[in-house]
Length: 313
Image (cartoon, rainbow, N blue to C red; front, side, top):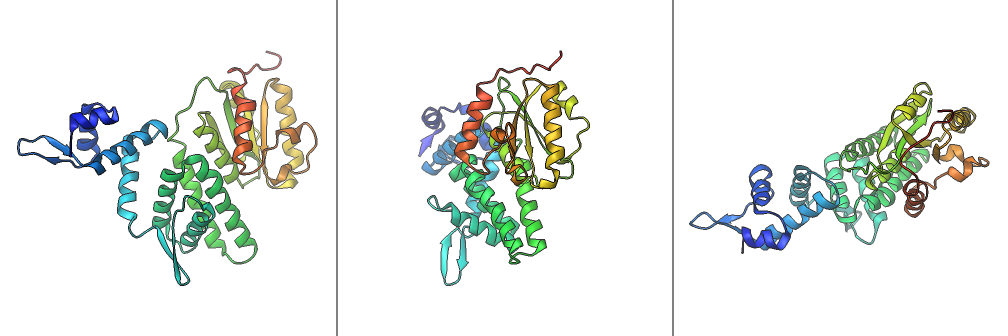
């Protein structure tokens, strides 16, 4: 057992913070001596170390971290094992992200959202945001799309899984602080383009790297985009397109923005941009490739100046 002074020294957390985490958020429940002094178990210390890592390294608030920890504890014993035929497989496996994708898909296709949420939360705590986005969420979306096209998933199942991922992604946007010295990104799908989850995941990847992203989502009208770029001092525009029938209008919009804003950079993603010529193909991003996305951040964001100059200004 450890006193609060010992725990404070071990974890480099002020004693006043430890008391606040206990009293306000129920982070741990230390026992008390007859004279009222707190005594912490080894498990309490490990829980507090984990909470500190979540707040400092993942950008979570302490309330969010405590909620996640409590969810893990309450669900761990029975929610992370799924019956598959005659065998039981672990819900999260450090060495097998494909199994995590399959287990998530099995839960969501059975409309088991609470179990899927717990499994996803555990995955984020174990693997980290980058790995989960690239190796779990992106393949999950690809899998449900493939299953729907093959007739093995119903429209209801496809919509349910897509909506589940969308809602979770929207929530993650609030977790990550951003670096004001980095260029700001505007992300959207052009008018009539509805498929935006790939763009959302890319935007989350950027946010996790400290990049501020203004995410407009699907079916964004051209009207008002120039005003946003000007007023918000946008330096990079990220566009996702899956419908090649919209390619001509989208390239025309890009050309217009290039003429209006001399220093604007672009990131293009989605099947709709396949086969485009220079200079557009040099801006295309490989879907769900963590290494390439990281290289893009280093190449087109971190090396840029933090201001955008508007042509003719």
